[in-house]
Length: 310
Length: 288
Image (cartoon, rainbow over all chains, first blue to last red; front, side):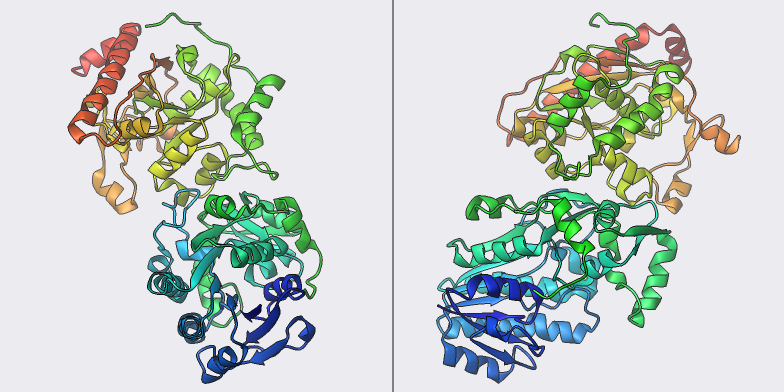
């Protein structure tokens, strides 16, 4: 089977590709050039945007039967315009191509950030909970819009079997995202007096979940979490770092000012380190028989080693 | 009032009680449940406040053995400005020598915004009072504690002591949905720990808090006036009430059940006050 994988240069896509390449013909596309690991993909296409015309040519020539859309730009990326183009316009275009060229199964990797970090959040948020992230942080409205675009596509195009995953923080030895960079730093800032529960999933478990979702029959939206939750400070300790408490009244303006110059963590994500956003992945476990293989201790312990390529 | 093991011995955790608590809590490999409960922190906190429980408030309990095993809703009266009543009930059950229970108290929605206190409450098993949280916890056969009076009860002044304020109806629907018994609880003495004579509502609006009490000692004595008065506190647990009917029944039928629970708690409070001549006289003087 021919499968198109977006975000093919990313560490998670490489892990997925490594697990799939013996059985399927993989077509990788990304907005970044692929410097190594070309053997993972039968062919690789470096695009400027997912919504450019060349994307259609890839679908026309390879006639893929499945799409793994792992190329979402994270909430930590600063350029709102670039994120909107990639996440919303790009995703909509890819979904349109899937419907036009007879793709049978579409798996989209979203994020749990769509639920937002809020003091009123109940624990074990299910898939039908309101997506309040854009109400709290308008800066990540694109991620919520991507989520809506996929669910709308599911509704309108029943002929394409579509599944949207909302995973928690994906961490592991080869992942290089905002949270792994933070946890790998020896001194992690923490808001003084706040230590919210956080969830983490190991990169191998996340890749297995994506493959299970891709091979399964169920459609819909599914949360994906790891073994459980633990406080942020505990996660820092398990990852081998130390916490540096900062009063929140000071942290918000300072981080806000510094993040304008890309010197710190983006301010709009700081509430995730103040209030818990704990999701329930019971539906995914029940429908797909998924269980994480890595415990929380193993998941965060894997960050004690320097980042390596998948 | 049921007979009481007066001055019940609440001591440090035994190995058996600790094992029992760990078994029921459903913790992950890192030692936490999804709400953030950590039993080591709970145990340390319990030991730290045990002196206040035993020697400052000299807590006495009756009817602890009436609490059924498994899922249950504890419904106490609320008073005394700070949630000391909730803490003492939780402590009484946590350190019960026969059947230690971890009680998950439902706290106000603004609690997570408080630094330190919000985090400590979460580690000790307290959760935001959201119906989804209640359902999840009851599904895990946990004991939850709800204060249907909310801030109406805790923020009331001495002129309304031991008069139950309006009850919300959500707790009865929760009990019906989850087939959980309701245990009425009467706390006698908590109202006098902070005898508020008036509420500075304009200041509360300014500070974003539900109320700002004025007591004979606060704000007159400054921070010293914030210390609760060392009133003896009695906690009476009533017979469990089992409702077995349609959870989607109309509001007026639910209201009847709410009124039944409220009446039961009020009569337990009145009985409890009868046993406390000092408090009875004080409340008579205040027009109760």
